[in-house]
Image (cartoon, rainbow, N blue to C red; front, side):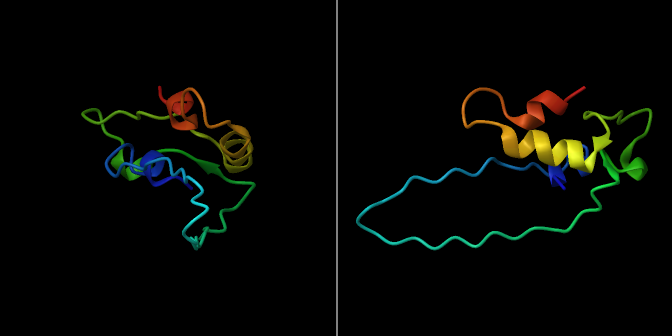
Length: 84
């Protein structure tokens, strides 16, 4: 899940992009949390108050993953599409 969404913007996430360098080898290690694909995601309910309303939509994890990984690296980020 995206920490930016879950923390309602308290902890920001950045989009990671890499440029291939043909002269220097690079190693990347991807790590993932196995989220429940049948669940939903959005700002944690404990962080939502009248003073701090939700900044992001609540959607299904499977829908989020599908949308996030189908985006191209141009234009708005998927997070921008989730903002309320």
